[in-house]
Image (tube, rainbow, N blue to C red):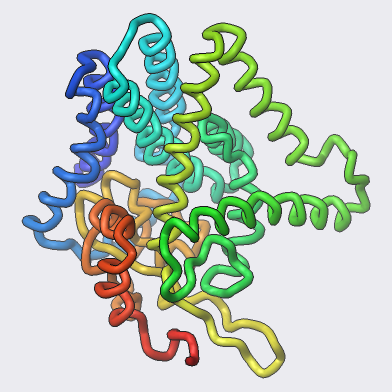
Length: 348
């Protein structure tokens, strides 16, 4: 029964459907819920740092109904996306309504799309991985599967990782460096994987080629069926979605660094190399992504099994609040820089 709480992860898409259906000021219902109401609730309710028992973990380690909560997001994300495009191309709207609906769609693409894709991308099942890749499509971020699994988890909390924000790096600068370096890095990783298997760069096993073809076809379909406006909506919603992802990337490892050993290699990733948050609403809303320290420590763990570790650096606020604060670099630096462990700060 405890797992029923994860049903509330669908509150974001529910707010999104309501907002797009009623339009007007309602267009901003999902952003208001995610970035105003949830932060307020997290400031009122206490954090929950308890871990589930080993018996519970054993029961949930195999196929569990909480896994189907992830799978259903394919229907939710593509259903909301279709509803958004049809609505916005069928009627005239004020500029503020269009902005609200695009941002609303982007939030769902980010929270119920990319975030769930991230979880499924770590699963061993090819079917689950396929569902994860499908959920990356609306964000035009299918390369994330390669870069995240073969790049980020290897290089997290090092200068080599594009998705690790450096000390005093503003969010807006991070957006540029992370987006560009991750995309270029994905091609490099793909090339390395093909070389390891003695395959040509033009092999049918080159997933980056397929991702490009699929994403271009997706955008062309939007243009073919809904015209230039439909194309613009898909692109704008995708940008909103992956900027939300990159904002989460920013707060997950901000300023944290792994030590380099005498042999030139970095120490292994530990619980101290990711920011953790036990704020309840953010945890549920993002399927426990906020227990990111344990995720990096044991990447193949299902979201409902993730633990809290006392040695992990703790965010003072939940993810939604932290995302809002990161939009204001001076405030973010003032709050976070003093919380970075001294042995991980750059030597000046």
